[in-house]
Length: 56
Image (cartoon, rainbow, N blue to C red; front, side, top):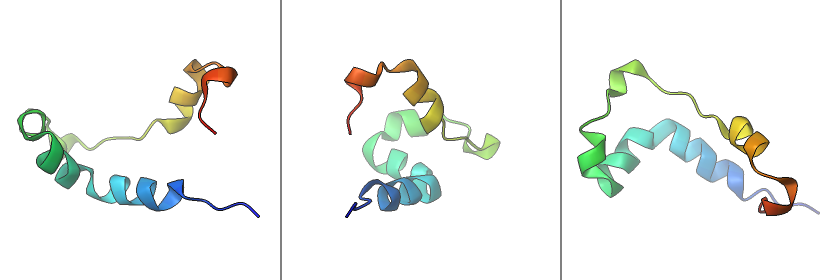
């Protein structure tokens, strides 16, 4: 039985990233042009990490 703990966090971050940055990184948040949108690149990050260094 596999439990997926990541999906709720990923969904939340995708929907509320601006709010998270405002809360945790306020100086960086004001420098970001949120109107341009953003794209999550989770799979691209996985490609640059060696298999033995990935957290499972």
